[in-house]
Amino acid sequence: MRQIFALMLIMMTSNSWGWGSQGHMVVGQIGQNNLTPAAKKAVQTILKGQTLADVANWADVVKSKPEWAHTKPWHFIDIADGQDYTTTEHKAEGDVVGAITDMVKVLKDSSSADLEKENALKFIVHFVGDIHQPLHVGKPEDRGGNDVRITFNGKGSNLHALWDSLMIMKSPMDYIQYANWLEHGKMFTPPYDLPGFAFSTIISEDMNARKEIYNFSPGTQGNVQVTEAYYNRNVDLMNRQLLNGGKRLATLLNSVFR
Image (cartoon, rainbow, N blue to C red; front, side, top):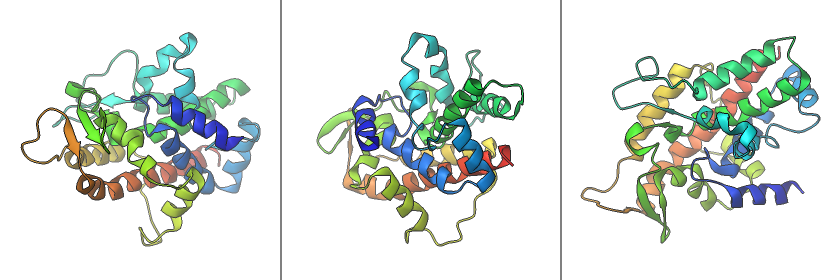
């Protein structure tokens, strides 16, 4: 049943959804793997037995419903080159930094209703994934890469979708295998230490990653031809962002549920 649900989500994925369903479930699985016993117990209670990976795409599913339409801007923040979060214009409807901050407050508030905590936790799982997809800290002029047309594996798409899901989907692994490979494979030398959950650090990493993401072949015009060389040059960066997202998700929840 879980595999069928995951496949349905992949088929439903929109170009504006961070990491696509597979990437979000990878982040959720890594987060689940690194919870402390106290945090794991709290998560199990709040989510009624579901895992972080199980609910990782809930925020994308509900945002298409009228009652949740106001949450669409919470999935990203646009920051122009040369600026940072403190200097960029902040929209009244909110952004991913404000959303994560607000949802953490809901979890920590003992007066929050059970359903409020459940929804807040689901949002956190998804938004931590979103903020680690570098184009969810996007350039305002091209809407986080959505307006950059590309051709990848012979099919037309856009740069945002490439980083959301198309590169991830080249892997034959399911989300559990992918998460375990990222955590225990030879790609990174253990121990793999991460800083605490600091928005300034994450946004800085995203904006640095954008330099490589937009590093296309010189002279390319119109649809950008995404070559195998581009994929090979960026796949480690993509995987590092997925791993960072999962590890930091656990760090955040472990601090909330001490």
